[in-house]
Image (tube, rainbow, N blue to C red; front, side, top):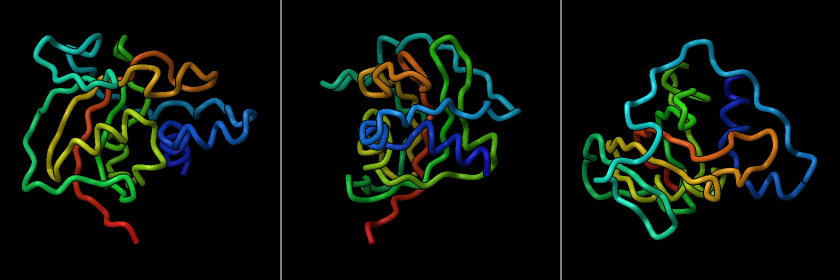
Length: 157
């Protein structure tokens, strides 16, 4: 339950934090198990695709079909997040259980990355601070790097 709270603390929409400025709790400690950071964690490689918002990503494995999650849907994913210095801060992989997030309830850069993906696809994405937590105290700071595997799109109710 504690790791679920960490996941929600790290990925829940910034809008929730804006609703209550006092909502700036420090995340729980990282999970015990850590995964090594990718060799290019410090900065996106030259061949990375860049979006107009500043997001950069590389496709690590193709997806199947053309199904992409819409803003009103949820996504079941496996993900790992690192700081650009290689410190892992969260991972569904180390917990051995995928996470499901509504696209409207995650940081802007994570939602943008998910909307670019098709089911089964795996990407590495560099999310600039402005699309992450914007430097808010108690949240991961700076550019964040995620490996995300979109397991399935969960249709809106």
